Amino acid sequence: MALIRRLTDRLIQKRVAFFEEELLQKYYAEVENMYVKMRGWRHDYRHHIQTMKVHVARGEMEEIQKYLDMLDDDLTNVETVVKTGNRIADAILNSKLSLARERRIQVKTKAEIPVLLSVPELDLCIIIGNLLDNAMEACMELPPEKRLVRIYMEMKGNYLYIALTNTAGGGKKAHFATTKGAGHGLGLLRVDEIVKRHGGYITRASEAEAFSTEVLLPQRA
Image 1 (tube, helix red, strand yellow):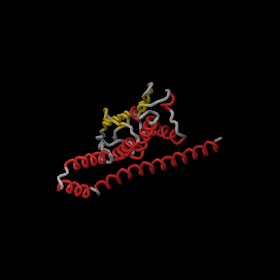
Image 2: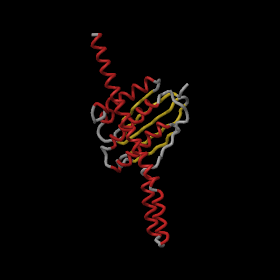
Image 3: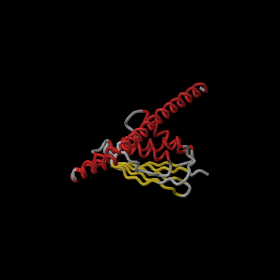
Image 4: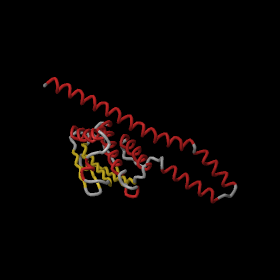
């Protein structure tokens, strides 16, 4: 029995390590994609200026307005919209917000992390990334006009308080259990394990059309 337990533990550890590596590669790709878009916009900045100068020289004010509206929409899709004070949280949040826009999910965010946390950056990445992945997945069950994710982060005493709420379809059980395979389920289990290991707390609540998660993570001593 002891041998079987050791082999089982090793198998679980390998599976978790593989999952974390796969997850990190996914997050790195998402963040890099966001930065590529930002660098591309900056690279084209001079071209945009030259184009508008041509319109000005021709007195084409209506064309300038159309061009400015187009640039405004384009920049909205690539700009960094969240600055929490924590670099890994900023990277993950902004990459996920970019994906949410592509999926026509409305996101309302208020987040501030003014202190160092006891949770390592890798673990914070896993927590935020998994919670947002699960929230967006649930939103996709709904028509675009009903898709909404609310993100709130602030310090409460010596803990970082994270609250994430999303609209969702289906019944109560559908909100707690992901619908897309063992990898996603493992992600939620890893969030619970990480929060507990670092002395934090996590609670979940489900209503008819919404699902919420609250997390407390301790400040670094």
